[in-house]
Image (tube, rainbow, N blue to C red; front, top):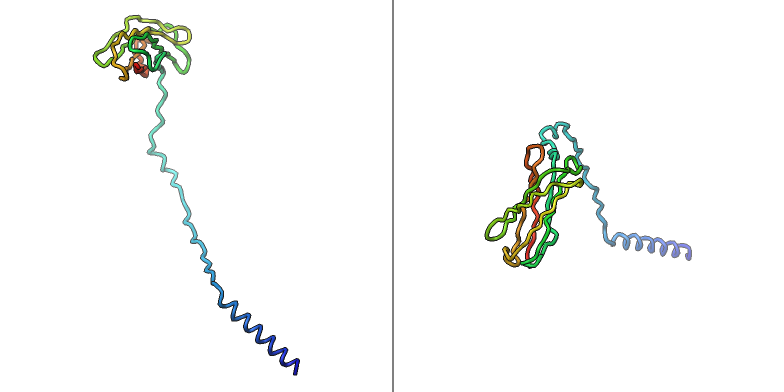
Length: 156
């Protein structure tokens, strides 16, 4: 009888464990959806515009001081290059644009072996404090005028 009651208890315990394990939380497993295959049409680039060419001549200008005094003296520098190499012997001209008028700098420098020119600009209170001014510089080379990115400054 002991064997039978031990067997019944074991069966009852196993049944109870199975019932309890079925009462636990369920975990839903979802599989990701298959991604579509991407196909690149080889003609998609045929209408893309071409990359612009770098101009033969490039130049830029800058000032020796970004915030000079209203009566200060600053230098305006510029550099001319041809295919990244300096251009010597090119004449330059510059015009300062102040709030109440323009001033042509009549110094007419010629670029040195590094492609650089320098203009001296006496401000003489011509530009209001905290108001930006620009200076346009251009070079004459091969019968053409090459305009630089402008220099700028703001008197303090």
